[in-house]
Image (spheres, rainbow, N blue to C red):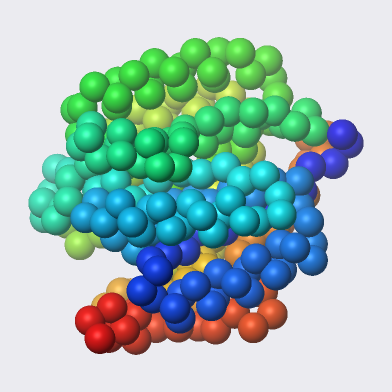
Length: 278
Ligand SMILES: [Fe+2]
Ligand SMILES: [Fe+2]
């Protein structure tokens, strides 16, 4: 295969009781059906509330299984709980080994590596980072082993949380620590990835679309496929809209297209929360 077409969706936050989010997913499904990429990657927050409702994860999985192309998955904080940080507040559902196992039982995987079109694609579970649970060290060992056999290929990393706002040296702030891969694991990850030809980091989580390059690595923040978050609740960093991202990888090059599916609506989190209580 000389070209490899990958569509990234993120933060679908699906639950059977939230029809307005399922409607947005249906528009995404129709777009995927019309464009038929080689693969779809959901970069996390598949479900609305996975840590307390396994049914939300099961519902999300059933909708992804109905997509007409293969799909790979990564967990988000709304699927298996969140990272502890050194300076931010304690998350309402800290990531644990049972919650990770629950995610794997329903979804089938929480990390992966594959190769296509001369590229190495790696997906990581960012929520277990900084937890100290057994699978955290195990994943770093696995990553070191996988990076050791990249053999000079360009690498594309998919991960729920972005690594940083603008630069690896950004200070960790109490107000935003939960938004990025937490220190000190962030630094460990940056050092490991510095040993390979890392060309892309594709993330989700922030529900804002963003695209910038630092060094020779392009950072693409996929917007949520489901809903945006108002400025009353979250600062504006990139573009607040719903949508998806399309990539086309060829030998040692790639293109990025920022897309919105036809019919996809910019639903606000406040309307989602109202619907979830009614
Ligand atoms: Fe999300
Ligand atoms: Fe998230």
